[in-house]
Image 1 (cartoon, rainbow, N blue to C red):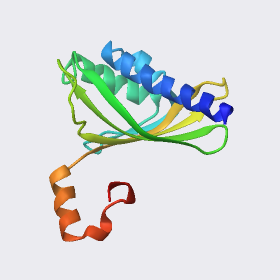
Image 2: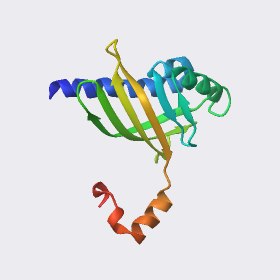
Image 3: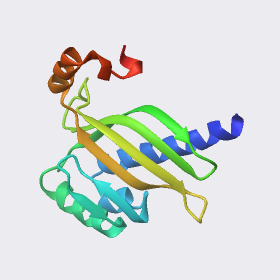
Image 4: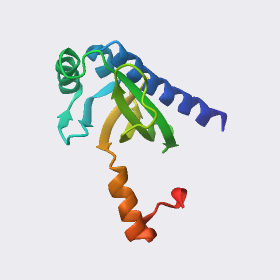
Amino acid sequence: MQGQQQEIAAVEAVLDGLVAAWGRNDAEAYGALFTEDASYISFAGTVYRGRRDIVESHRALFAKFLKGTKLAGEVLDIRCYGPDVAVVNGRGDTYKGKRPHKLSKVQTYTLVRATDGQWRVAAFQNTQRKPVMEKISFIISPDIIPQGQK
């Protein structure tokens, strides 16, 4: 159990590193936390492939649309699949000023332990949450409500 707690702490440290790098608008530091061949899917559905693509796209975003923003994150669940793979489900959002109370995106990170022993993000999926649509669908079809929300 102690070993898994250490792995979870190491995975959380990567997520904290992403938040810190974003807060500095540091595309290189942000990208360094991904594997060389990582995939990154934005909330708009754009697919980026590889660390260089992630770095260059974030460099452009930090210079314009996301300039001065911070990243908020909330971990919902971390599951380890063996000693070298972890899947994180969470919520996140970008913001300026005060951190938002409700985070508008649902995110999945797949992390792997790289050959240098460090955990890195191998895949990231970012989905815009639609709470009104979700609520209506639950009213119409209550059988689709996730067990954790019943």
